[in-house]
Image (cartoon, rainbow, N blue to C red):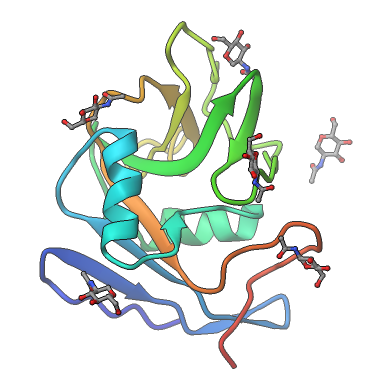
Length: 163
Ligand SMILES: *[C@@H]1O[C@H](CO)[C@@H](O)[C@H](O)[C@H]1NC(C)=O
Ligand SMILES: *[C@@H]1O[C@H](CO)[C@@H](O)[C@H](O)[C@H]1NC(C)=O
Ligand SMILES: *[C@@H]1O[C@H](CO)[C@@H](O)[C@H](O)[C@H]1NC(C)=O
Ligand SMILES: *[C@@H]1O[C@H](CO)[C@@H](O)[C@H](O)[C@H]1NC(C)=O
Ligand SMILES: *[C@@H]1O[C@H](CO)[C@@H](O)[C@H](O)[C@H]1NC(C)=O
Ligand SMILES: *[C@@H]1O[C@H](CO)[C@@H](O)[C@H](O)[C@H]1NC(C)=O
């Protein structure tokens, strides 16, 4: 797995590798500036990324946990899942994947207005590293986007590759 970083307004992570015997070809992108969830999704689009990141399984989640720059504290990364009328749904696809180990301890706490989701990337906090937390969409965090073929959950896409 090669990680290439281009230091500009944003950083680019190029994923080259094999996972479960299938090629992975997403690229993941994040801003170095924080913004609220709505503006974060806009940032993804305005930089020609496909959408805010849609995580499809634990392997992909763990991959992101391991390659993203460590944030030793808040703010963390916005991910593309939101509480829409009582269900956690992924942007673009309306997928509902939530792993057994996705949420941080005692999360989601469903506090009023905590409809958006961040991923903690905090290598010093083993309990929370790579886990999710529901938070207010107005809070400012780093957008995490992907670029690739739009996902289609009517059939199970794993890591859809270029090759
Ligand atoms: C996005 O794509 C459009 C159309 O190809 C291009 O004009 C624009 O410069 C791109 N924007 C960025 C931020 O790459
Ligand atoms: C979504 O938000 C509503 C309203 O705040 C809350 O009652 C519900 O428990 C949340 N749904 C989930 C799946 O957490
Ligand atoms: C996801 O759900 C929203 C609202 O229910 C709907 O407008 C949208 O078309 C759906 N998207 C897909 C890809 O099914
Ligand atoms: C996740 O939890 C469900 C319900 O407890 C269980 O049936 C399933 O086997 C678990 N999956 C994994 C991958 O641990
Ligand atoms: C996000 O920020 C934009 C621009 O500052 C603002 O217009 C919008 O109301 C904010 N949305 C939320 C949910 O805070
Ligand atoms: C998703 O993929 C299936 C199988 O290839 C196809 O039949 C369906 O039309 C696709 N749906 C969308 C929204 O692209």
